[in-house]
Length: 396
Image (cartoon, rainbow, N blue to C red; front, side, top):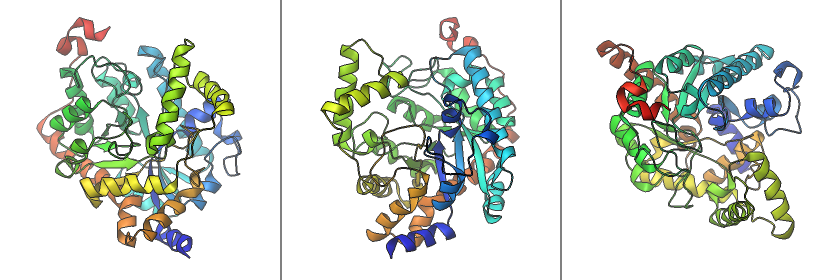
């Protein structure tokens, strides 16, 4: 009965997910032509297709135009443009199912028409090649958030999973946040170090998001958000979108993952080489099967964010097709109703579930647009270069 109630909630409040890596998964699988990827069917090689998105009650999706940090400078910019092109071609290939959304009003109109509102998020500041002009060009192509870092630092911001170098944001990093918010493009603080989170919130004139991060107090992983940062979200009007990655969700899974990292480092392997990590994970699982995270643990993160930041500041960013570590029962994009059912069983109201599912993200998009209009009335495009602000060594 509860799963039926959860589906009814998602019919009333179609889910808005903050992060899905299907575009990179398609590229890696040799499916850079989305028209030939048969996304209307249950594609066995991915966690995402149009059939399962509909089954999951998804009405809005941020598609990540991710490229790995092994690419830098012009190579990173070019690959990101290729991923943006892939998403545009994916939308064009399925016009009865997908439509590009550029504004909060677009999201409302497209979901009301029964299509999937498709937005794009660039994952990692390396994608802009230290250029505010590139950032503006990506905005014009439809990108609506920038994750400030990925797994490694950029010259102007520290990552959560790298050794501190900038101490948070540099002067140029603060200009990046300012230019994002002048455009109406969301500053995404997933993947960044706590000092970078704090500096971005200090600089912010509009809501920020965490597109796919959970609560560090529940699971001590550097990709999760500390309570002191969560407590600042009400003042910023921002949003933490709880993710499903098992090692971010479950302390036992995190411990197993630390053992995997130690094994790889002992063998001289890079834990952030995803191909090597996948192979090492499969090998280690033969002798030491990993524990399973649960839907209940994901719900624990959602409840903790609600407790610390408030119901207005919690959302969902599953990270499907960006991980092979998922909780039991959250195997693919068809499974969102199971999480909503868990929250209903815990006493969440339908209205609260609606805010988590999509209401909060829609509000953030609208408020970011309002802030952009006000900021743009005060200042024009920032023309600074990183070497002018942070010095020549930072631009290298």
